[in-house]
Image (cartoon, rainbow, N blue to C red; front, top):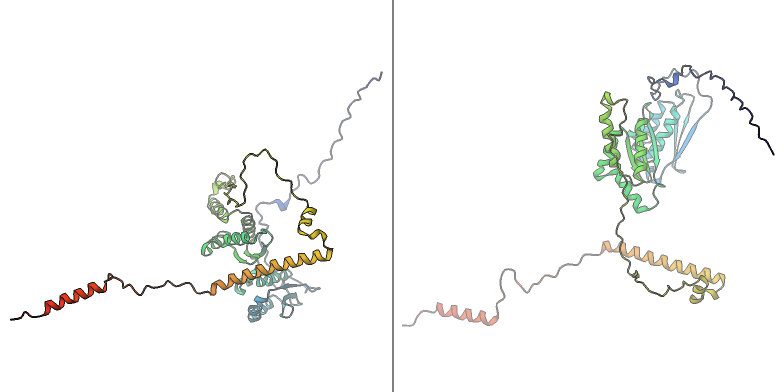
Length: 356
């Protein structure tokens, strides 16, 4: 027999005391606003920059005319901060770089944001504001958030709203400038507003309507004014919107088979080889099969092209005019020739003077 002897449990080693546990942490001070921009003047940098930093941004061809006309204003705005800029119309790019006269090391990042906004169709008078210390920018890419093109266009229109009312409400509540252009949304404003707009835009393309975010932001704005609710949770005041997945009634297919009970099993589907034998493709060589597929693809493309051309030509066809009935006169009943002759004879007899 094996006799198990219980060994006495060894005591766990004591953890060494943490040295920095009770030390003051100045970065955790709630009275300090860590997002407050620090002021920077021309004399704060003792020596010029030793290396040149540069950024280049491509722009679409439809922006070429606008940029060429307003480029002198861009140059003068960046020259005040000691930034050099170049416009390359052949390559289609804008470049900004630092010089020996640059007195702010972070201004090159602001200049990069400026040319990004100009490339995304933001007006120069608005884009120049990004050079200020308290204004930041972000370009949200929305092209990959929704694959279906029709659904993408519908959800992008939700951001604009009827006559741009939704977009205006977003700008007022977030203190940001929002520009929807193509597959991007350009935003300018404070950090807090940029975060709110990004959340709103991403949820909009996840089928969450912007009106729900707007209602929540309006309620939060009212709650911020009440000092008694400063340290309380606001969950009970905010609206709770649950996603409802309602199944829409789809159209019945024409070839839909009724689900009646039959004792016979369904017919076995044909194999791929059997289908090729029926169509004759099985007996063709590989080159002939490729030629046949390419021909079928070309025929299908030709049909689609012809249908598109016919659809375009429908706009230029004159509408059918209603044929006017010239035989009937409006407001007068039809009169036969016999009745007209009888009435004329009766009128003539009345006008003749009596004889004798």
